[in-house]
Length: 86
Image (cartoon, rainbow, N blue to C red; front, side, top):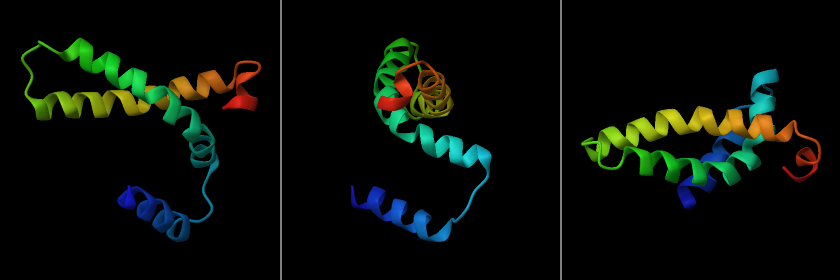
């Protein structure tokens, strides 16, 4: 947890400004926190029993779920009523 807080503080101080894409991703961050867990569990369940090593499964889930979570969060935030909550 300390690593996460430390990295957030570091990036807040080191990275200033940002373009349209980084502002959009930052706006979606809370929604990503909510939707990523069901996505991770679903993809891991799908990959279970496929004969992948733990490292390969982790890399596959990490590479696939991060962009998918941001896309899903951006889509949800565009639905009426969700923008106020997310």
